[in-house]
Image 1: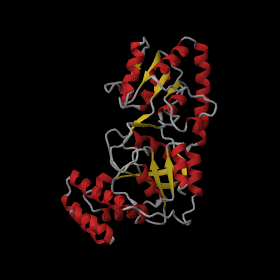
Image 2: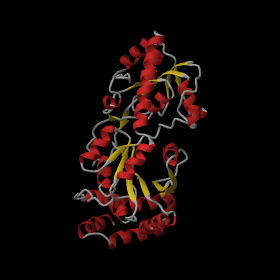
Image 3: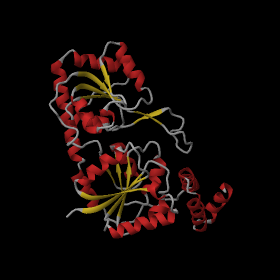
Image 4: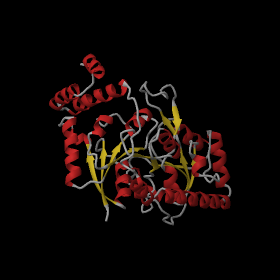
Amino acid sequence: MKKNILIIFKEKKEDRVFDFYLERKFSQEFNVNILYLNQYFYLTTKNIIKKINEKIKLSKINIVLFEGDHVSIIDTIFINQIDETVKKGLVSFDDNYYHFENLILSTSMDFTLVFDEYVKFQFNEIGVESHVCLIEDDNSIFKNYNLEKKYDVLFFGRNKTDRKEIYNYLIENNIKVKTISKNEKAYYDSFELAKIINQSKIIICPTKTETTKRRNNPLYNFHYTYQNKGRVFMVGLSNSLALSEPFPAQDFIFKNKELPIFKSNEECLKIINKYLSNDNILKDDTKKFANAVKLYVEQNSISQLKLFIEKIDKNKNKVKIKIPDWYHFLFFKKNLMLRYRYGFPKSLLFTYFDILLNSKSKFFTLQYIYS
């Protein structure tokens, strides 16, 4: 019999790719319930917690997953007021933006689900049990459609960091590059995207990620970091070859160097020309890469995630931490600003007084200054 799981997202967006993949993945092994926090900002945070606890009892929820990677109303105080009978997990797929907030929040959870082996070790390092949870690994979408490979090079996704420079350089050097624009169905439809990937010989997978501008993040002064992306797994499952920028966990996932890596535009061009000039090498390396992806996806399948969650011991002692004042103040401000943004002055005011009445004296001083 399937257990009941509640996934709490920060907001419902038109482009809900993350929600779409995560819901499909967990629906294979669980009865999935979804809750979007922004639909409840007319209530105080205290009453939102009450609503969640009522839903937990009414729907007989066993596990609650909380979307991380943002500053919202979900902080350690929030988590500690959620029904203690359920297992609580943090879902983090963009950890470089909110790494320290995620680490602090994870100490009030029973486990974390992350996108990358490197990040997994960082949570394990502080004593929080963690497991890799891939979301772009849906092999009912990303699979070999046995379509003709009519595109030499595919480049898809948003033009962030220096991505435009990469594909412009390739075009200038006579490489035929297929890009997916916003007016194409494949930009929004994962099934159509999977078919175009399957029709492409080589897919460029950038890993540079812009860092946050918030100064409490030690990466503030860096323009970008290198981060594992889901494109690599989408490509491998679709039986095409990924050509990726480097990322910290690459050698852990691809132990035999099955994923070709480029570190400059010139190196990218050189590797592409090698494959396009020798069809046999392209086919052999595509096969090796696709097999490595399938193996890694199997190791982190939903059945493996289910086993991981089942083994979590709720009764073990939580990680002890001294929570810094900036963390409380950050979430205090966000609790109010979100209600201001969504136009709920009444819940803003009552949330303010709720937090004020339940805060320690040190935090009270910060609130007084802010008010």
